[in-house]
View 1: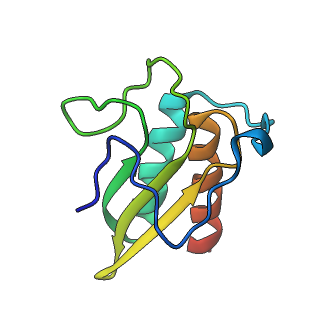
View 2: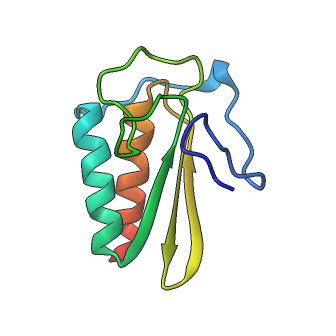
Length: 112
């Protein structure tokens, strides 16, 4: 079973070494990146999104926007796309909000 907390990284995807993670140029807040990612998944026809990270969850199951920065900045997003399971994961950036934003941008390209 896929867990939103703690991070459930997809087995088939290698991790970026911590020393190679970079600062991004994205200019977004955590809450906006999270909410826009959920909206993007819904726009492309995806359902039941799970954002998995090392951030504790709110009562509605989404990660808190106001949180202390965990050591692991990786994010994996799982959802159903026309009945098939899909996962996008990113740990290139040193902040979770930036990895969520990168996944949102990728999912936007996939929907086009």
